[in-house]
Amino acid sequence: MKRDEIYLTKEGLEKLTKEYEELVGVKRREVTERIARAREFGDISENSEYDLARDEQSFVEGRIAELEEMLKHAQLIEGNGHNTNLISLGSKVKVHIDGDEDEFVIVDAPEADPSKKYISHDSPLGKALIGKSIGDKVEVEAPIGKLYYTVLAIS
Image 1 (cartoon, rainbow, N blue to C red):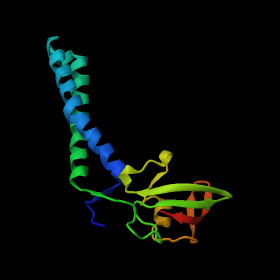
Image 2 (image 1 turned 180 degrees about the vertical axis):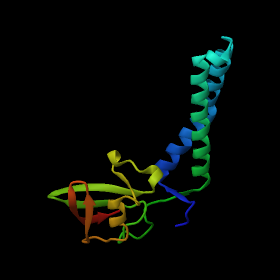
Image 3 (image 1 turned 90 degrees about the vertical axis):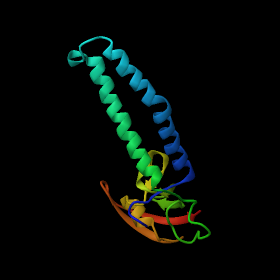
Image 4 (image 1 turned 45 degrees about the horizontal axis):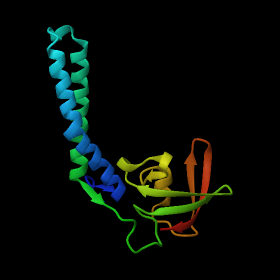
């Protein structure tokens, strides 16, 4: 992987694109209007509404710049192509852990969301799973101790 490339699933790319369009097309204009209204109140040196609007503008512009950079370097991943024998970026992985089964999708860091079972390939579990195949066992150091996973399926 090249260092500047950001690998995203189709859903992840759509989510970032939608956020970018919302910030550029709607939020930026709203913040500009708030700043203009706050200026109408007079002295901006003691105008908390103006200060809040400027802070929000700074955040919005920073996020827009961050998203532009991410989208500029985005590479779409569609699972691991035809190879369902090895876990890679975009793989959906079913594992066995302590008598239970769980599923994860391996993604790049910007798309990671453990609550939705999207784990980063840079996370301890992601690093342990990348390159593994069905039947492989992996050991992951977690705050509660070592966890042992067995790969059951890759899609």
